[in-house]
Length: 92
Image (tube, rainbow, N blue to C red; front, top):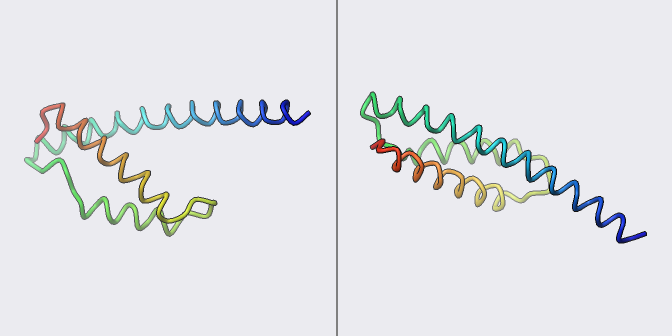
């Protein structure tokens, strides 16, 4: 019985992982568009002030079980990968 419940929970995790992947791919498409706009205006790829503001806002709105540190770490990694993506697109 416990193995069945564990299997169900793991299946739900797999479904959530796919949703997260889809959202991350959607996000990177927008990141690409933002990078193109930055390139047109001569803006830098990395904006640490905006990143800090975003994380602060997300921490305020977080009502789940994740700690502030967890939210911070996850989004720092997302931002880091977004910057790398834009840099690979030759967006300076």
